[in-house]
Amino acid sequence: MADMTREQVEALLKGIKDRYLDQDIVSLHQVKDISVDGGKVAVRIAQGYPAGNYRDELAAEIKAALAAAGAADADVSVETQVVAHAVQKSVKRKDGIKNIIAVASGKGGVGKSTTAVNLALALQADGATVGILDADIYGPSQPRMLGISGQPVSADGKSLEPMQNHGIKAMSIGFLIEEDTPMIWRGPMVTQALEQLLGDTNWGDLDYLVIDLPPGTGDIQLTLSQKIPVSGAIIVTTPQDIALLDARKGLKMFEKVEVPILGIVENMSMHICSECGHVEHIFGEGGGQRMAEQYDVNYLGGLPLDVKIREQVDHGNPSVVADPDGKAAQLYKGIARKASARLARQAKDYSTKFPTIKIMNV
Image 1 (cartoon, helix red, strand yellow):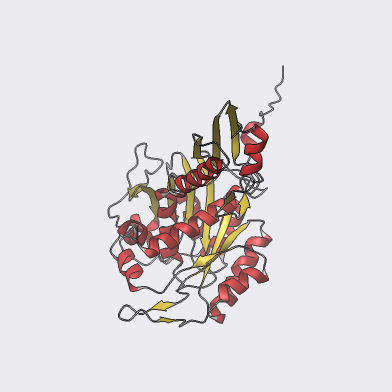
Image 2: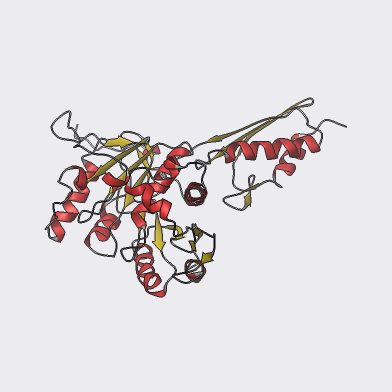
């Protein structure tokens, strides 16, 4: 068989789709280099999101396609290149943090914090550097969910070092107060605390900072949308109508303040009996999918109502780290990949590429 040309290799790659974006890798500009030297073919692929073991699967798929076309000894590499993406026009991106993802819900009790921590851990497991900010000042959950106790330290007396566990950095008002102490604060104090938790923490370099928002569309959500550089938001809901009604309000709020919606997660979408395996849709069926279609946003996936998910976060070992090969962990990883892949398609942040012009009196 005759040696392949560069054009033939590129045409072949147009037939390879990215699983989490459902588009071919050439159109997605993931193909960074094609080298053809006699019978030797080398291809370099760069994905804009952390894909974990899917990188190996994609490389194997490309190698198999090339082998079938006659390039049996092809060299294929697939790497991750997470870059900073654009935020609201009125705010500047925080140094060191490439992307801030807000996880929100219209109402409480839908499993938003459990979803947020597992998505953060899924991004980390797939190869990203990740932090999580617990923005629920009144009801902080992340210290317990991450299994972190103690208080953060300050090396300079001005800023705090984030707490760490399971490979991610974390900050929460829950680290600074007793677990049973109520936060009897008015709105301005709460919003100031959120800004300080974000701005006065030494996050270092992060690919993603996940912000676990309190439920609703009040002061904290408004502060986040006006003062904190957010690259995208994920809406968590359950299938029943009352939860979807409130989730729509959250979605509309982010649309109004020009924060892109990365997608909708439907939590507790079904119950699987631990004894017999029977599947029952306790809270209804397909509500998240219909909402995504109605507002033309991405449906990231559904998560089951599973006692193990609850037990694992209660004991400080969320599903992604407690059972990394289990079904729940795979669902969280799939949702994290779809969300970060969608973010990778958005406009990049070029603000640091432009020089700063200073006018001086001579």
